Length: 229
Image: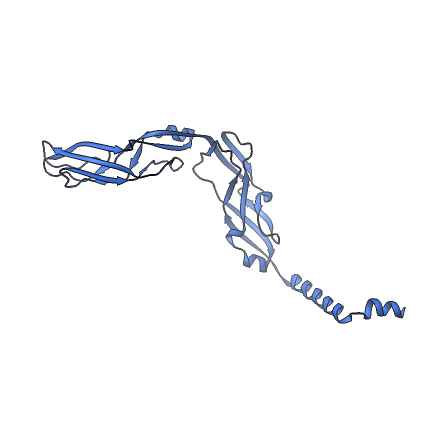
């Protein structure tokens, strides 16, 4: 008995006592840490979208996530620590509804998801389309007395745009940032960017557009240039 006591109890008793004290201290720290809840707005990330598809919804909603856990963890929580993820494997064009549950929420392991709002997300997808559309320069300003626009040249005259098929098909032209010809009486040149109004349709190569406006003598008084040509 004495041998057992000395071998398993007395041997390294200082180290064993320190370990016991550390374990008790950790248990007390956890036991005394109150539970807290927090609600945060987080982005919904779309992963694994097929290469030939485009999101055709105007926006992806955010999710409100309620989390519960130790107060010390909740107080240290940052917005970048939590996000929702939806996988789009094998997706086809058209409307689609996705469940949004705790399984789609990435968060610190010490916290649990209490609620997800909304619990479903409705999104639309369409086949990607790329096509060329004409570039229309936007000319503004007041002509010099007795002058009018004789000719406008644009280089390039067309640009490629890409996006969801139905949205791209609805685009008639790209518009340049405005050029002001106030007081011009000869040839004036500008460099501007062209854009389309639909935010889901992107200019493939957003290089500057070169615009040349030739003024000529004309009948009548000075007048303002139209918004676009």
